[in-house]
Each structure stands twice: as C-alpha cells, then as structure tokens.
Image 1 (tube, one colour):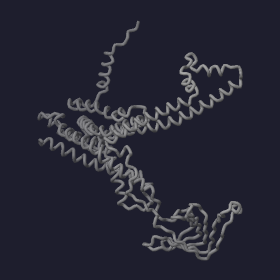
Image 2 (cartoon, one colour):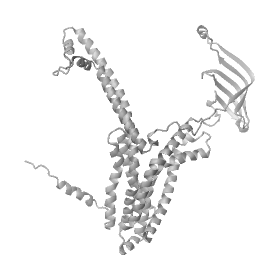
Image 3 (cartoon, helix red, strand yellow):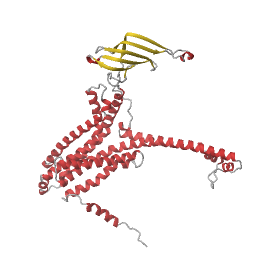
Image 4 (cartoon, rainbow, N blue to C red):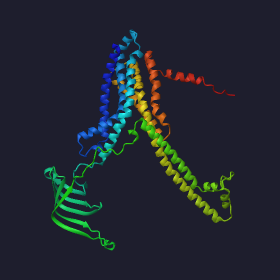
Length: 481
C-alpha cells in the first residue's frame, strides 16, 4: 500500500469510527426512550437494561453504518478538496479514481462483512432481544402502594387514602379486596389504619390492620339459598395478614419461547420458510376454491347435470323452476338466493382477510431475505456518492456535509421504507421493493463520480434532461395523417 493510500485511509477511518460511535450512541439512547414504558418501574437493574440494549443494537447497525459512511466520506474528501490536497495529487498524476481505489476495496470488504453480520449476528440479537422483551413484559411494577388507587399485590388488591411515618409504612383508611382460589372477589376488608411490617430477607409481607370490618360473601351449595345473598361480617380491633411475595415477579428472563420468527432466521432458513409458506398458501386457496364451489347452488346443479345453459349461464332446471307461474316459488327462490349470496360474500370477505395476512407474512420473509443482499452494495454506493460530493462542494467539517448527508440518507431511507410497506400488501414485488433504493443510488453514484473525476463541479439540470430528450427524439412516433 502506498503512502497516499495510507494517508487517505487513516483520515477516512478516523472520521468513520468517530461518526459511527456518535450515531450509534444517539440511536441507542433513542431506543431506550422508545421502550422506556416497558422498562421503567419494574425494579430492573442496570445489567438487565444493558443486556437488552446490547441485544437490540445489532439491528441498528444496518441503519447507522450507511449514514456514518456517507457523512465520513463527505467530510474526508471535502476536507481534502478544501485544503487543495486533491489539486496536489492531480498535479502528480493521481486521479480521483486512483484516490478512491483503496477505500473502494475497503468498502467491498465492509459490504461482505455486513452480509455475514446480517446473516448471523442480527438474527441472534433479534432472538435474544425479542424474547427478553416478552419476558420483561410479564413483570409487574415494583412493590409499591400508591395513594388513592388500587394496587394489586399477590392475591390482594389494596387501596389507601394516605401513607405516613418512617418509610411510609403507616396507612390510613385501608380497603382490601382479597381474591379466593377461584379468582373471585369474595372478601372485602375495611380498616381505619394499618401498618406494614416485614424484614428485608422475609418473602412475606406482614400487614396489621386496626379498627375495621371483614365482609365475606357466602356461596351456599343449594341454588335456592343463593337468592338470599348471605354474607358474613366480622368486626376487629387488630387483624394480621401475611401476603406471600415469593412468587411476585418470579419470571425467567432467559426463557426463549419464540425462535422461528422471520427476523430470527438465516438465509437458508428463510428460503425453506418461503417455500413452505407458498406451498401452504396455494393449498389453502385450492381447498377454499373447491369448498366454495361446492356450496354454490348453481355449481352443484351444473355438476349434477354435467352441462350449463350457455345462453343464460344458469342450469335449465333452475330456469324452469323460476319461470313457473306460482309466485310463491319465485319468492322463496329469490329469498333463498339472496340469503346464500350474502353468506357467500361474508365468507369471501373473511377468507380474503386471512389470505391477506398469509400473503403479507410471505412478503415479509422475502423482504428480510433480500435485505441481507442489499447490504453488500449500500456502503460502497453511499461512499462513492459522499466522496464525489465532497470533491465537488470542496467543504469539510460538520456544516454543509452534515446537511447533505442527512438529506441524502433520509431520501434513501424513506424510499426503501415506503417501497417495503407497499410490498407488504403485495402492491409491488418484494424483490423490487428491497432493491429499489439501491438501484436508484447506483446511477447517481456513477454520475457524481464521473463528474467529480472530470472536475465539472455541481450537476447542471441540462445534463440530466438532455440524455432523456435525446432518447425521446429517437422514438418513432406515428405521423399525423
């Protein structure tokens, strides 16, 4: 490797690592705020939250890395042009293509690494983060009794008016709903005040109530006695309750129940899943078509007669039944026909919803499969665009390169996002949707690289429309008579 290649590579990698670190930190913080409602108030330690963010981070890299490549290339080559280092290179016979060669090889290797990363690391991270998130959702909020609202703790639901004293362990105006084994609320306890007593190592919460009443609904075995709605009432001066907290938030966070989601699969697994789903989808359509045809009165009659009246598209015996003079037959036939048509339309609508969900699942598998291949080219194309723009605008630093990077990246990102959303409901092909943004980047990267190499400066609109107009003139339109 020559000195000039080492110099450009060092300058570029320094900015790439810095930009990637900053962007990754921003996206991780944004992810934390996105799931703050699911993580907050459950007594989670910093290790569990850090583990979730680490598992979730791999799926952010395909979003962060292209933006970092684009911004780093713009800053690097913009600085080189601004400091007239490119002019010095060209004076010694080093063209822009030669200056880009070393970094182009690096981005080819980076694309291959991203392909391997998306096929192995991202599915594993998705598996871990998704199951951990499901397990965290099972956790109840930390043991805390809030004033003025009911708080579910173990087998009781407790409400207090005020709390006071050391560690707020004294309670005033206490109402408790106690659940039986059948999950019904048969016991209600009301007390003027209460006190919580428990040791840090004790799995039970000791609750002492003072000056209250205990109401219990009694359910007799005989049905006729239940109409009397009997209940028991007991007054007390001091009542002690032991609430078992051993099973409170006893959730295995390492449990993995979901392992076959399309985002957790590698390329070979996705191909098998797509083939299986498509085969099942065709079988479902065939079975429904056969059953729907059998339910049709006209279809059944046609199968019995082996022929259909081609002039009327209705079997002859049905026509004969309709044209008879008895009006009651016509009315009954029309009512029955309307009823069956409505039932058929309802079945069609329900089945269409099922088929739509089935087709959407297949398309999501295909989108995930093709996304792994697009990562091979995205980094290289965005690097060429960023390096060419940097050489054209001749501005380094954070200002203009940052603005251009954000505009270009958002354009690329939203083109891919909108096309993938359209592919989910089968509006366009999943293959076209996943490759659309990449195919749009390719000609722009070629045009900008060519113009930057020729020192033509910014793009002129005439240079864009002239080839299109030239092509239109070559189309043989029919002459007017």
